[in-house]
Length: 139
Image (cartoon, rainbow, N blue to C red; front, side, top):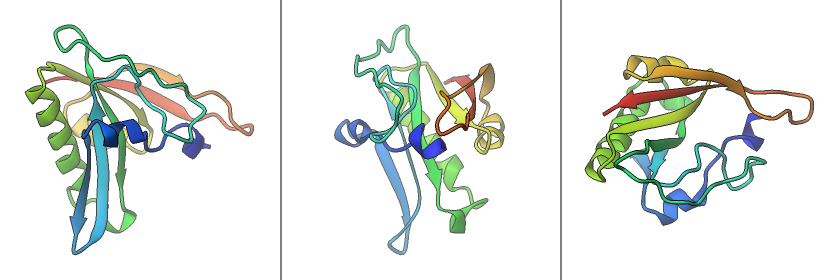
């Protein structure tokens, strides 16, 4: 059910805020951030997206669509992507970032200094609910 909740939002690509890390032509991981109000949800998602632009002076940038190729797990790819997202969001004037984490991503985000803000779950899809954790970090 998580693929109907999460996924790549092609708006991130159009906004040039989505990154891919490759090793010898193989995608090791991908992820991005957004200056738009959408917190999570991809092109194929049942979650509505909010295209409104955020105000860096008062809003948190959104870290979005973070994925690591299982063949590259535990090799620092996620941390590299997260650092790249944080650095570019900071360069765009944002002082804070937030993300909606699946349980699989929580250890990475905690290790990178993110704190839990609120527990929630995605809407039920095909009888399954996906637990989620809103997390944030000051840059």
